Image 1 (cartoon, one colour):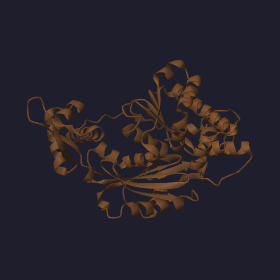
Image 2 (tube, helix red, strand yellow):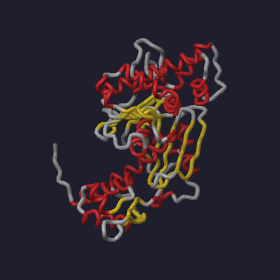
Image 3 (cartoon, one colour):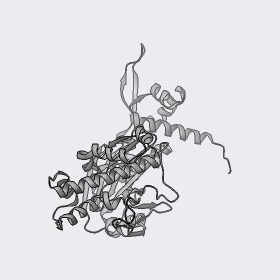
Image 4 (cartoon, one colour):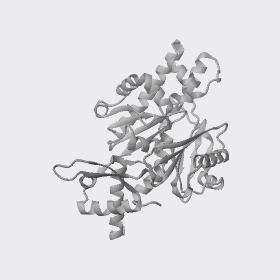
Length: 393
């Protein structure tokens, strides 16, 4: 391995990144607090914050009393320095949201999806981006993050592999570009963008080892080890929904049998209920149908829900045994719906399938960033570039 010596420029970039990240995640902070939080000397912290103030990346945010001296000025990342856009590509719709740098939501566009055709998805993303940018200078936008189902192969241009929806090596980034989006573009798996949102703003904050689960029509996870998202050799890590939970069991949308998604994904839960009652009532949308099922008093509905809770708990137990996390966060619209009424039962099912010692170290909690978590996390992708480099791209 060739070792390279860090230059003065590298060190300066690293220090800017450390300070910006601390202010974004934990600000507002005084210069003294920044020095203590980052380990940088007071002189270095003062010099760099002065540069960032001059560039408009930071602003003053009031003051706090000091011990016997002058009040200390608080600093924060300037919300008006720029904008970021987050896109959630779901199986039934696309959400596009515009945020300032305080992650305040400024505009939202929802588009229904009648078919998961890649060209249609690209066109809807492009039109949604145009709509949320009404009245905003494109030059002030740091970039667009897109959360999608399936595996994202990163390279010169992102390619999506989503077997369950029939996407095989879809060149989605190129297609979005062809549809008219010229802003910096980052594409990532939706469970991973939700994971980033929860680690930055939600139930994962402060954890170094966590698993953030997304349960919607399908099922996926983001695995965080040592504070870093685990991606695997080809970014395929996190396909929890396709872990075999019942050998030779129900056919999954991926083509295999016995996958967790075939028992705990919302589409599969509803399909099992309809099979049990021998009725194919699809008049309700998936979210409304699941909410109705979870509150139904019928014996069949209760049995299907209880079985689904058991499978979900067994699936979480596998995560506890495999990864030994300190925290498991249950999110996704269906995960939140199940958790709102069945969290205690899910935890009990996890306990009955997990090894005692790792289970004793873990907390199982509901996600806090809500149903927009994938879009929020996607919007942090261009913001993460700013924080990592210490300067706008």
